[in-house]
Length: 85
Length: 257
Image (cartoon, rainbow over the protein chains, first blue to last red):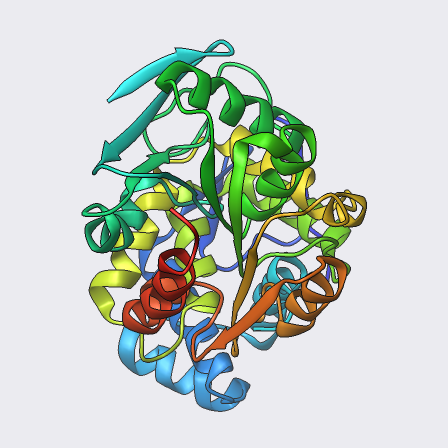
């Protein structure tokens, strides 16, 4: 996993593009279906579900794939922002 | 209503008659989130709720830290001709209330400190750094949606979830980050010993943002403080407004008029 690098003015400067975003030039652009899936993933983690179950539910409910590294990256950022959830 | 002090134009509401209560909202909220408390108290108190600078419908021309928040409150009370008030500080409002009380103790009738802390000693630096990075590329809406998913209880009604997301979307990103730095990194413990007025310290049992231990610290540090733990998370005003109001109103009604 390569840590995302973002400049002070919000430009992409390297690392893994977070789930929920796509790279357009040096900007990260929102992917609405994936962002909905992020919220679902956080809620499911809070309910004690683990990755395989969450990935399956997200595939069914949102029609998107979240890989293990993407899921881990999302949750690492969430835990760093908010601590225990 | 709006008033301009300290280089900012503040949105506020003022309703009712009687001794003044000033409500200081949580990070990402604004005065509207106090509407249920104002409705329940305005027949016997003058209820005032400001949007902090950079939140709700207030401007953000400068910067924010807790002493600035306390100075804003002093200037707002001066502008409204209010000498003394009960101060209710929710989460970020707690440190503002503590610093205001230490600087202008004669202007405080009582304090209510809700889901807040004297020193936030968990994950503060990491939270500030990660939030700073995320807010450089995330919209406030997406930041808010993820925040809300982590913080409200599964039983919180959807309309309350949506309301909180909308409220956070009104916040300026710069103000939001200033508040994270301003409340999470400093230690406000020294201000607790300056509290000489009746104080209620209130917390949600399931609060993971400012857990019950932070409330226990405040109760220990503030002489004579009364502690109430209610069956909510960090944002009890959304999770269970009835339990929230019950604890708050019981304390305020018991204060000398």
